[in-house]
Image 1 (cartoon, helix red, strand yellow):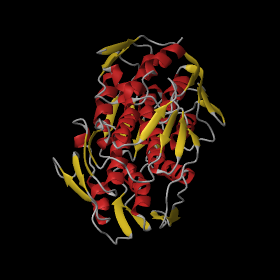
Image 2: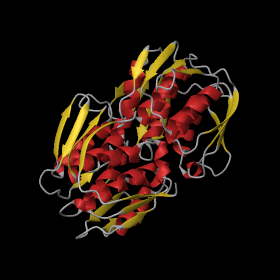
Image 3: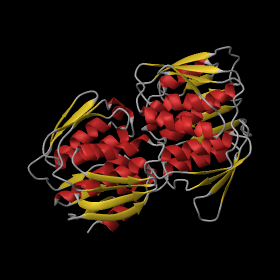
Image 4: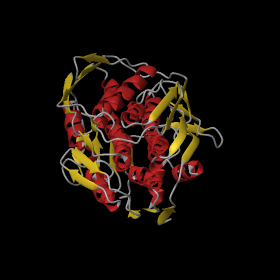
Length: 427
């Protein structure tokens, strides 16, 4: 499908059961592969990024069984040693697979090549590679220095007990190191240099490592100690939460389009930081309610603009940028420099597409300011092969205008059924 036409939507109401979290799905798969014992994973996300991780692990010799047509899988752990010692892995544009696999394989005992789509080869990985080299990793760039594709050789001897890594480019670098360093056998301390962005994603990593038997000590604000002799063991069974980033689109739809809209699968007990997007909507004037496993939004007074720091939830910040065109004044999203190195340069892409709706948009290196138009304009939205561009701009159809979404199938990366669920709630 080259495009999808969304007619004007008068109201959004109903409930939706969210697909599994991409971040939790890929972390859980990798830890289950690395542990001793077999792990039952329930409600694994059915999307491209997770398929890339599944394919990679199976290529590396991990036995994975699927229970019928369900999203329940049984992963037989390899106790930190992949059976296949030489392989070429193609990981698409799945950063949540590419970064941790780079770290795990670099601390292993094999020879591997990792590549992806052209955009993945434009996404920086040099800070992670530099940190792994401090632990004796043999990693070569096969193209431009600092970027994939990569060649990984057998790790050399290393007595390093402390590594440093920048925290202001991608939290996935820190998460990748954390998940991999138990394979180093000796204890390792990871010092994060500069501001650690997207901290809630690192907290997801620590939570899941704990469930697989590895407790990481936090020393001060930005030093992590992985103990000597740490080893992953199966928790037996683990259920993947619904995706909190995907929840943001439906909660925003309820806030803009009347509601109530309820999302099921995430709530007050979630380990994902993006559940706090509900607080953002409340600050903008929406009415929010919640339970342990659900969140609900409905329109309150007229939405108002905000000025807020989105360092901790950059993915949900994209939803806030589109909600901003429905507000009563300007909205400024700060500390979102990581948008520049995502699936596309999201600051530039958002500025271009929001302007099509009639908004006035100002940008800098790490912020964007959106001033809403008197009335939205019909628009054809380009999505830049970025699933979140497609999903968040669907909300523009709540502004009384038709919206065309180009390349809607890019949502397969994390939410293949998104548009079907969106249209089901439209009234």
